[in-house]
Image 1 (spheres, rainbow, N blue to C red):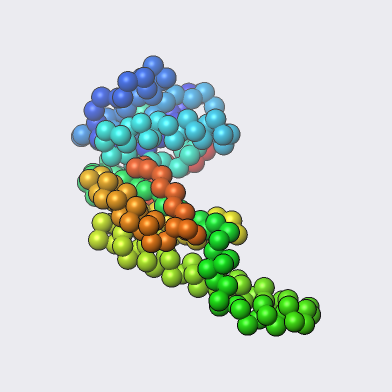
Image 2 (image 1 turned 30 degrees about the horizontal axis):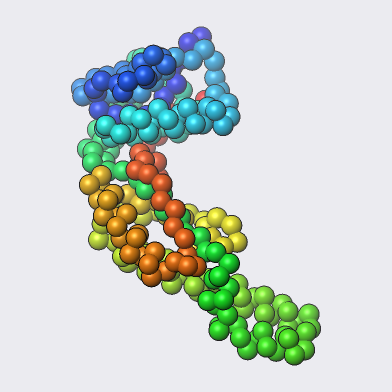
Length: 234
């Protein structure tokens, strides 16, 4: 039985070049549209290829207009079901709220020189361990290094957020990646603030790098800031 795979919601309008040829279409009503394609069966397997295909469609559309992304694997029964979703009051409100907004993913990672930067905080324990290397001393030194790195992480994150705060609408914080991860932030910004954010990060890099390195991804659809159940994941 043919169903409709749901990528998300957007404003009604033309599709970007190439998407219609891939079977992507808009089911539109009252200026709003569900982004869908026909599928013969569900659930949709979360393979790398399928995940990338989902993201590509959503992000291509977001280049020209707001997209409220649906959770990967969301399927609706037919066009009538898609139209019912479009009629939900939350859809119209979120399309208005995020009309000129995008998400940026900002990750901070330390290189190994951070260990030199925090060395003064653990110097006493390090010297004590060198003079008398014991299990207890080694454990105490290890804990001190973890605590000093955590303090550095908090300090740098606060400095970054303070600098970016005037240009950001919202922030969501995730777990840093890896042993030397400093922060993992999702930033909700207006589209015209992206260049300003990039300029601010250049200034921050001059102060904090090394040991802190920045990775900025986006602009993206507001994945982390849309809290509307658009359908039922299959």
